Length: 251
Image (tube, rainbow, N blue to C red; front, side):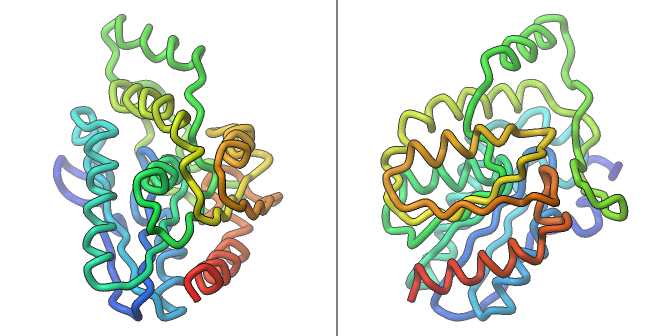
């Protein structure tokens, strides 16, 4: 693990100046930009302008993440979207896992967005899991064992923290409850990728999102991949379908 404050190799934020269409790409909880860098580069190769921020507390050491919460991450994502909007005419947001949660949250707040791409989004806060996490916190724990690098391809490892910081994940659960009530505000087209075999976020989260939004939903099953599908066997399919989607909703 990198020393406190030092960014892990490959975990740096990344941006690309392209045409008048901008795509914001968001990584997941305890992950970093490296897990979605391939997707960001696919958008750049297609000519789009891209912002790939490193969310607060991520990509350095888990100690840096302990004091962060949903407000920090979502605010950083919204700031990146604002930067993108200054230099582009139309914007799409794409996110993996918690990045998918933030994508949905931005969709409820920014009706001007042309479209949303969610990959195994975490949008449901399981009551039992929340109670379990709260119990660990009450017992004085700060972290629990994580399920990072949930990838079917044995030759690929996600650059993510090995443990899960408890207070931050509780803040994500609390936010999920608030987002759920607002999902009906999403009228933009949604491209939704779901791995049936996901050991981090159940596929039922995708079902919930698809049922709750008001706009059109295009669903794609990532049958060969686990949670971090953007680094797994279906990654090229995700890249190709996502670029086609952005082309369609911004043309």
